[in-house]
Amino acid sequence: MTTNDVDFDQLLRANLERVFNERDDEQRRTAIAELYVEKPVMYEPTNIVSGRSEISRVAGELLKQFGPTFRFVPDGVAVGHHGLARLAWHAGPDQGPIAVTGADVAEFEGGKISRLWVLLNPQ
Picture 1 (cartoon, one colour):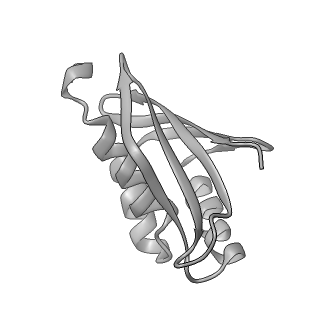
Picture 2: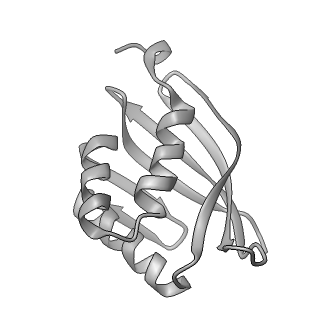
């Protein structure tokens, strides 16, 4: 698979919707298996998370922490080339104020996310 074959926008949007907005643990694990390499790493501002199961756990805890209507919404289209892409997003409760903005920057291997950096904008 060449870099031209990778739909960075589709993959990063699927990551937001199917992983970080998914409250069902089993569906989230299935999505991670489809979207991530076998041994991915996620870099958060205060933590480094290794492995599919840990990424799933962190995503699930995040959703529980912020309540039943909290969700991530993509801003614009993901851009990328040569195996690296970025998608800006905002998050907050449905119909509520935006709580946080940021971007996901992902490195891809074989059309799957191998490393993900979660970048938060200053408040």
